[in-house]
Image 1 (cartoon, rainbow, N blue to C red):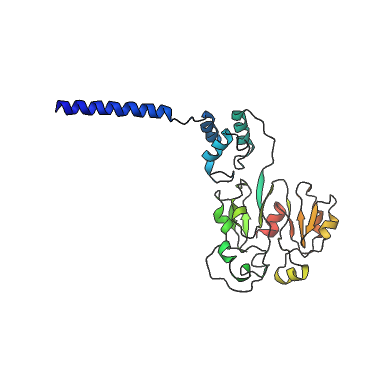
Image 2: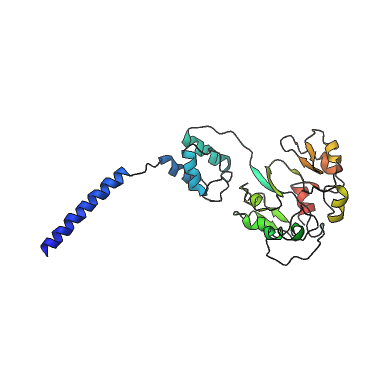
Length: 271
């Protein structure tokens, strides 16, 4: 019995020594900055940074593979903290917010068949015509973008259009990636004027399927004093970098597809 106990002790000591040597030899050096960076992040694990969660982003930053301001959810304050940890500087960037560039809900847009499939925009987009709406570019109204938002910053209104709760929106971009029609963009929060249409059809076609679509009249392009509205593929689009939100285009648009987000938008578009 004593011999067996001694043998087990010797074997245990031998294996322990081997494990100790192996742990030292094969140890992976961990950059102490990774944990510090991760503790500075919001912990949303939303993937907006392009990495698999906050830990993946922290490792990438420490390795010099990702910028210190690569977390849109954290904003300027988090970027500054990470920059301080890394000993670098970051430029001041204006926060971005999601904007849904379509105003054609149930009241404004026509449908050409009844859809009874999965309540998901991506599924509906695979059906004939790209969905039940007569406009093949407009919002399908099934809330896929709303369900993709990890911050409860979106909801579907009574007109079956997604609305963004600006105070909650972090600009993570999950809704942008979820929309099969590419109707959602991230825009600087200070830019209040937006063209809520994505149709590339000619004016007469647009008029038949939506009452608030862009009819390619180009009046907004001609009216803009800063010449910041581009016109391509039968669609006007605001170049946010030059827009000063003067609202000249808003007053000129005959279909009222150009709106001002804020009090005017709340009164006229979110009813």
